[in-house]
Image 1 (cartoon, one colour):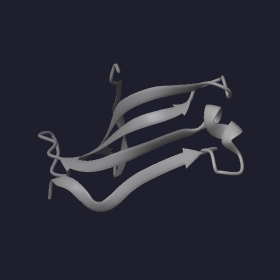
Image 2 (cartoon, helix red, strand yellow):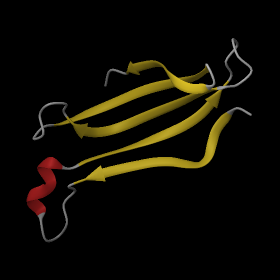
Image 3 (cartoon, helix red, strand yellow):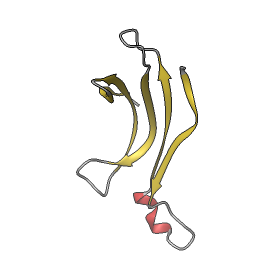
Image 4 (tube, one colour):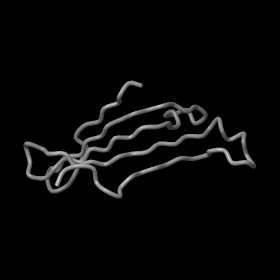
Length: 91
């Protein structure tokens, strides 16, 4: 089976403003991920590809928010799925 995994969508966000706390808008971040199974010509089991887009807290700087888009590929090796590649897509 290959294709988008139905019903699996990761959505995350934090510190987004509410009517009571509009000052939180500067620290608001949100992202979503899509999970797909894609053929792996070197193995009978497909790779799992997770594409994530949105905003996140900048690593090491809790007060800064950055846009991002990354693609992580997990391949089946030695009895388990492990991260085989990670690509940051320029925005």
